[in-house]
Length: 189
Image 1: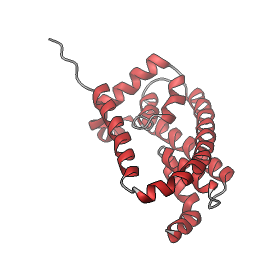
Image 2 (image 1 turned 135 degrees about the horizontal axis):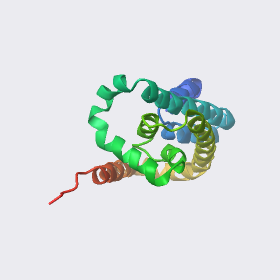
Image 3 (image 1 turned 30 degrees about the horizontal axis):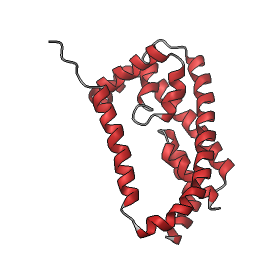
Image 4 (image 1 turned 120 degrees about the vertical axis):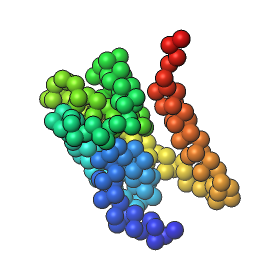
């Protein structure tokens, strides 16, 4: 276990950057927890996650804006979720750029969907940077404060190691069920 923590503290910032390009919610939370344990620096982790997340969403936006035809084969199986992202954009407007950072499953599709519309590039980039900053700071500090709680529960989880996978499976199942429900075809009988 100690060697895993040592390698995480050594390569953690690189992993955090790469993972945050595509979302990185779990990575910034883990970095906050590791920062509580003294294995990573919290402010450096927040900065790295902020920069990577802002770059990642901007890249998705630009790829879908200027390479629509090349993106279509990759989006063939995601048509319903992409339509959901465009409906959310129409319903919630600019707020969806902020909200998508915190919603697992659509955080990569929202910038792609917005890029396919005529949404202003400058406005997207400004809102994206502000949202990435709020996202990284809030989740970084949440992970840091969760580190204290998790250290208290770590003794309990050592006695019952089946509980954390059960919690994670339940969360992933709930997210999967939501998207299955939200993107289902409606009967038009």
